[in-house]
Image (cartoon, rainbow, N blue to C red):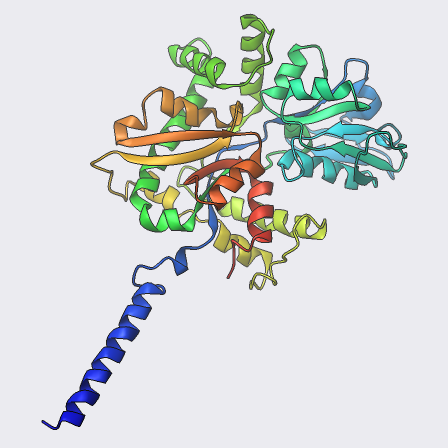
Length: 412
């Protein structure tokens, strides 16, 4: 054969091989270009936070609870399950300062929504500044009841919106419970489970195995709460006493009282229903994303990220495949120990099912070594997910949505 022809053939072969390698590396063949970004893959709880007031404040000055329809112009929330109206006294709220766990937390977003409902501006408080009656002020970055009581010494704080069990601690310590988020945002999405798409791509069976254990832990926790005379409930209380943050100086009796109160305020879930569907969560995330863009909490809209709508964004962002695989048994359990790095909010009773599964050796029985890194709030959990230090994160829906969209970690 002519040498020129042979050379041409060799060039073609090399070129074809190069194209094949390129496609393998850039998507379908095993590279990580198609595994960038983060996804929401499960629920943790709905509801489970509350608003505290200082002992000197009167809850009746802030909210009137009634079963009668409020008059024209009233600012209120109707709780359908309770068949009660929560009517807001705007005059009292105006010019007040409340603490929140952080600017991207769900509690902060909910306080912002209440300010909007009342027609009040929502502004960060600056020490020493004058307080205007047309504004509801906040001090963000207060993660615990103890921190709140410290902040009161230097800031004109009157209240605190915070997750459980910190809300229950405040009630036990003599602070006034104004309202639960259960009352004001009935059935609202709270914490979710996030992961990186890279982790999913290389550990799908491991993730499904993790979820199979977590689902069973949630069921056992709910069964224990429903039967406070059971051994399972005693085990749950013992785990919670060890894992949930409580202020120094509380007696054992006070700690148990706070934990039991908190457990009654949190609705523990893993998905929308027993099939593992997250369809309702997709709707919640769609509405949340759109509202946070409108509130300038998110600076990248759905269209900026390549989506035709917020529903389309949520459909991509929230993936229920792996939860469904776990529930259906459509996965292969690991035969050797698999290490999973999990980030979660420290001392938060919302994540008690995670700790229950760890302390009851449920993960270990499935060859999973779950290592938890405790963080101060949801944005900090997101940070570990985003930089690859955590494989799975337990955090609020707002920080996961806000940070992922702003960082373009969710895209069409």
